[in-house]
Length: 246
Ligand code: PTJ
Image (cartoon, rainbow, N blue to C red; front, side):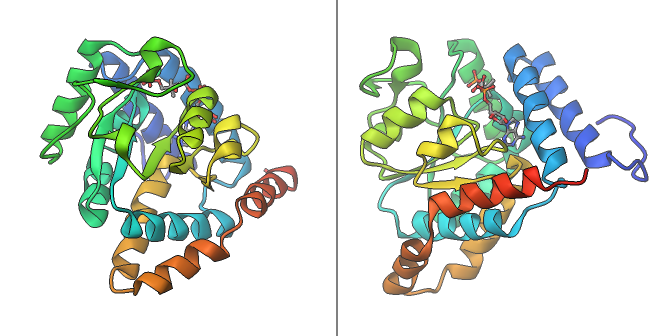
């Protein structure tokens, strides 16, 4: 990794940026991923580059939903693979979820590179290459999923998802957990559980909550999910951003 002094006030933000750059260089991340990262950084700056309380509650709810799921799947794109490969594998292990590569700008080559990269970080199996099913209602390339993966999942985690596909997945009656720094973006707005936080903080935070909730009873997990209100979480994130003095 790059030599940024830890004393630099934006140390974490700069490290994250370098990981995306490296992802583009190794063919994991798309060039559009750089633009997406820039957009995310602006919101993160306004959120104080920390997990706000409503995002922490959303992450806890996400952990409960994943533990309670019959078939949870974590969707991985080029940005997620570059930023949090190890953390994604750790979350999959903690909640017994499958990992599936699912790209906005889909190419077979990038899917293979991402699957290899996740394998190098400990993933045993990575789905996404079979692509034998389609999400109804969106155009061909972005619709491709595995029939025994996202297609048949009951709970899916989709970090940095595009709005159309988030909506189409929601219409398939899945519990959709979206991680996105922009509370006004369509994907968190249509999510069952929107987590307005940086994926680098949100994924390990869900894992931590999952370890914490592991011995909870089924009704205990259910009541955590019932108590969560998506609109309130979105509103609180927006209010934090509007009132930011950064
Ligand atoms: O690898 P691919 O082909 O699947 O492409 C992935 C990207 C992210 C490039 C693609 O899905 C895309 O173009 O996304 P958008 O429409 O730019 O949306 C990205 C969203 O993620 C924006 O709302 C950003 O604010 C948000 N975002 C960016 N970086 C982060 C983030 N949210 C959480 N954590 C981040 N690090």
